[in-house]
Length: 263
Image 1 (cartoon, rainbow, N blue to C red):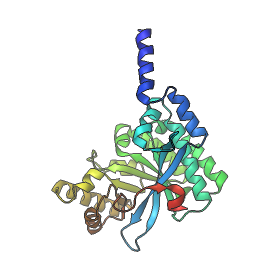
Image 2 (cartoon, one colour; image 1 turned 45 degrees about the vertical axis):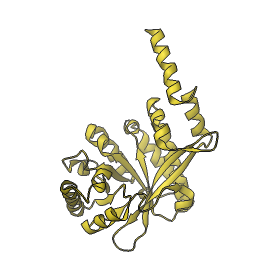
Image 3 (tube, rainbow, N blue to C red; image 1 turned 30 degrees about the vertical axis):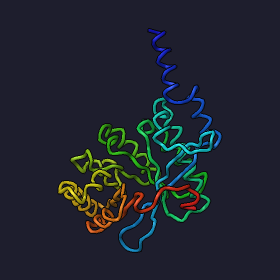
Image 4 (cartoon, helix red, strand yellow; image 1 turned 90 degrees about the horizontal axis):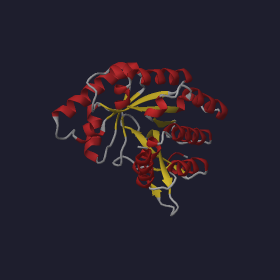
């Protein structure tokens, strides 16, 4: 059994693409081999412009090519290092806000592993206090699947963030949920309509019904609605016609280096 375990560990390293995956990821975190990107979220009501931007991350390879998240995030997850990555992104976002930004807010994705960290909200508060950045300049995105699978854990995390003063966003909303309970349980400020719904607005009555319900509830509860994965002009106009307040996607603005987009 031990031999089989060692064999599988060796094969895991080969599958990850690095001889020492943990060492490779730690080096990336400690030696600025990660690159912060951002994608703006644009207002559809009133003067059109970027209200805030979602912080994304890329990994620089030795050949100076940038790896997209899909190629290295699973490795961070497998070796239980997502909290370290999330902390790196938080520091980078706060650093950008502290040095001046053209947007009022930056949003940061929170991994399932980070939701378990009872001290993460305190870490955020300490970083904000040290930098002088206002807490409401940061919004944290919790995926709908995590909010549904672990409601108590997600709610506890949301309460801790609210005590610090940060905003809360539910990402990918409406694909799985058949209830609006997560909006109140997580005290959400924003909700992103799942991209599957957005892409089907022109062909699916169910997608349009889901969107309309989300907009109605958002207006009634004060939760701002964002259409994500907007890839062309057609869904953008459909979102605007439905009363959605914000949009994000390659059809609006493509991601780019954080400093260039919001600096």
